[in-house]
Image (cartoon, rainbow, N blue to C red; front, side):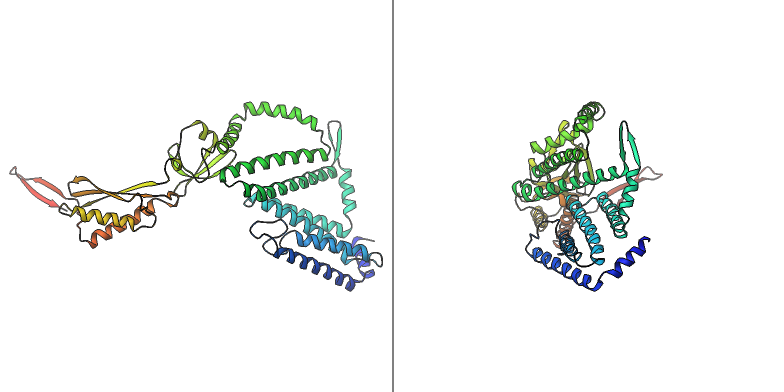
Length: 424
């Protein structure tokens, strides 16, 4: 009897309508409980159990799996089951996929690599479910166990490799879940400074992942004493070939611990000026006002000169120059320029804008308008342009002349004289 004949016999011997009714009841109970819990949850924080909807997380398929598995065990005492057995396989795969996807999305919300891992794991989980439904999973496992590989004096099968990978993956998944939950429930509430929170998150995650990796390796039978030799070799390699990388990692923690530089500070590093948007363990991201980003190794922030413009002064000075006619009223010009600056929302009233007559230009009187802003991360050229436009409109409204450059051109003639020519 082949696979499909066996499935057909199981289907004919079962009571499909009764099993369907039981399955609907189990799924309905799971949906009601999930919806009840969903309305009482903290909507401000992401959750593994819930998604954007009540059944978008791992809780709904998990509850449906528990109810369906219990119903299957109960019904099997009285009659053969077919539909409930299929439902258990499907719900088990769905619950595992949802759990893995939600934990990874919560831990690494913007990683494209994680999205690829989710898809690969989903296909593998559904493939195992199909094999279980067809009843050929034991045969496939036996075939995988028969394929052996020799590592020195140790022989290991493909099945053991798969089981070891699954064990390590599940342990690391639990570790990531615990780490992310601890970060969101404890660190985010206790540590208010963004840079210190970043350092605490990195330290917590590294510590828990290291512990989880050691536990996972011990579960699959790896002798941890052998790791001491590997650790020694890694230390030697770290001291020679990876000293720059190690220096950047150590420098990153020093930057976060000393708090000389923090996320949100405006800095100037090697002639590049911008705002710190992120401090990673190896590098720091600095975004300029024009949108360009600079990736600065953390070692540079420790060993070279860095100007922290935020610590020096929260206010940024901008200036613009304008030339008016030589016969203009100086007091009126100063008032027009100052009012043009104060009319902009981003220009600070204190210290107030200042206007100076800085030069007697060949074409008229040159004034300098100086003003302050406290949000350079929102752009400097845009606010300066707005002030210049307001200055131009104010001068035109006051009928103050903005002269064109005047040049005198002398053209010699045959008689040795010069003909003056004025050109505007």
